[in-house]
Image 1 (cartoon, one colour):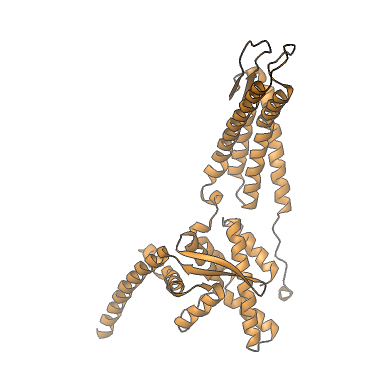
Image 2 (cartoon, helix red, strand yellow):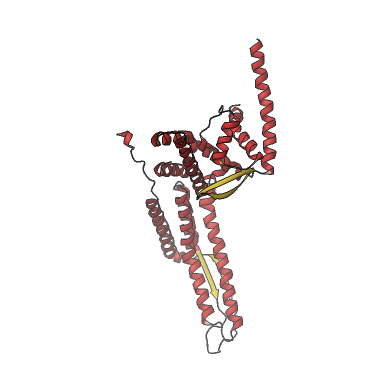
Length: 247
Length: 112
């Protein structure tokens, strides 16, 4: 089976909602089967071109294979089956889970820094610098990195499965909004023992920060949609070239 | 009724595949040859159409597969699971009843 035909079938299967893993496996088996049919026809004494045509005919047309694959609901990707849940709900929920995880890591790092080290009385804060810097890094990741990461994962998922644009875009907008809205607050204990370590995660209600919210939201959306366009351009389907018989 | 009729005919390939793979494991090309042999070439499907059905049955837990490389070529062997055998028994029963019903109708017409 010519690679050009396989590439065309692959694209049609993906656009039909078949999961990439299933598509790859189907193409692998079709290729192997086509080779076996070709050998069989040649062993029967058919000339190469006739053998190729017979093997191709015995395999079934692209339309028939596609229709049969689409009949099998289990072969469809989750994104094709439940686009709203997978594209618009899972990424924001995933971002929330990552943020809570980051907050737990932040508290763990700060607590460790507080317990392990006896801080000099001359220091302003009651934790060592590495703990302070570590928590800042985690907070930065949660505020700026995770929304971009979640949006990128969603965009890549949508492109590799050829999902329609609408729900992935909604997912990116929601994820970016949630990311831009999230705030982290950390209160450090003082070296003289006053105060306690406390950390919180919440949603900003500070309307003075509207510009900051807008900038973070726009940056995430721009990056994600830029990646979407880039990946779409990279993975543009192979156009069916005219065969010699087409004239 | 249209849905039932469609299921009636589309279940044939599932029935044949489960029947053959409950006897022994086979890879796709081998299975296609076996289908032709047991049906005496009365049922001619595009051989490539077997694979979506095989994959669907596997994802449904009715088949199990293993991969092997033969002369540098990958081969995926399939065999029926216990659930596949139960499904086969059910499909066989359905097919026998439907077949008997159709034969009965045709028999009546022949005598009319």
